Structures are given as C-alpha cells and as structure tokens.
Length: 184
Image 1 (cartoon, rainbow, N blue to C red):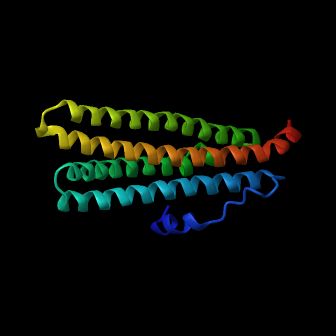
Image 2: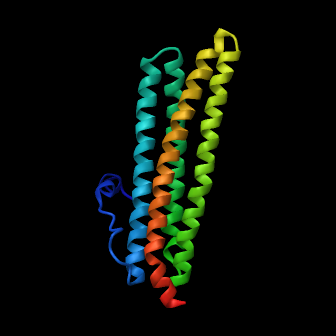
Image 3: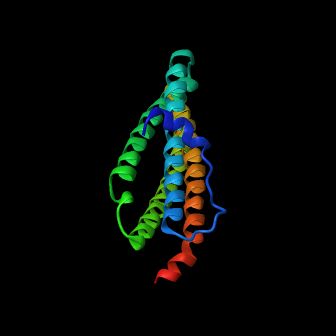
C-alpha cells in the first residue's frame, strides 16, 4: 500500500447495501473492508507517534509518561499495520475458490474476535497500572498513572475499531449467505 492509499481508503464507499450475486461482489466488499481497516489503523499509529513524540518534549509529569506510552503504542500499531498489509495482500487472502474465499472471511472475523479480547485485556491492564500508581510512593505515581491512562485509551480505541470492523465483516458474510446456499 502506498501513502496515498492511507488517505483515499478512508473515503471509499462501502457498498454493503448491494445484493451479492457473484463472488466478485463479496470479494470487492471484503477487500474494501480490509483496506479501510489498514488505513484507519495506520492513521491511528501515525497520530500516536506524532502526538506522543511532541508530548514527550512539551509535557511534564503524568502527561509526559502518557505521551511516551502513546508513542510506543504508535510504533507497535505501525508494526501491526505492516504485518496486516503483508498478511492481507501477499498471502492466502488473495487465493482460493469460492468456499475458500468465504473461509478467509471467517478467518478475519475470528482474528478480530481475538483482538477484541486483547483490547479488553489492555483496558484491564491500564486500570491495574492506575491502581499501581495509587499504591506506590509519589516518585513513580506519575509514571504508572500516565502509562495506565495511555493503555486504557489504546484499549478503548482498539476495542471500538475492532468491533466496528468485525460488524462490517459480519454484514458482508450475511449478505453472501443466499449465494453460499445456492452453491452448496
């Protein structure tokens, strides 16, 4: 994916209301959903890195640690975006007959469900880090509070994002069910 794709993919229409009558319709929507997901995650990564680096320079105390952790999360999410691009466009997502294509769709849904569970773990970990800030001496309280709030922010954002994209995949496969029943 080129840099231009990160901008244009955000504005491509997602034709979920069209009736699926061919595999290409299903595949087209599936690819649009994947590309949008990559673009959204890529932008989130970039925003986190830029605001994180600026905040580390300009902020103090708890906010400095908050922005530091956001920058780290931005780099982690950029790595995930890179793996997502390679997995999506260079591997099994591009191959197979009709039944294999539907299985790939189901695979994407399962991965998103796993991610939703991880997002809940991030939120829980952030709450734990905040609690740690309450229980330690004042020297490290800002560090734990800043890290805790950052991890909570990441967890909540990724939880919402993964749920939205899981729903889009669910709607796509649901529209394809009549077509699948015809073929079986």
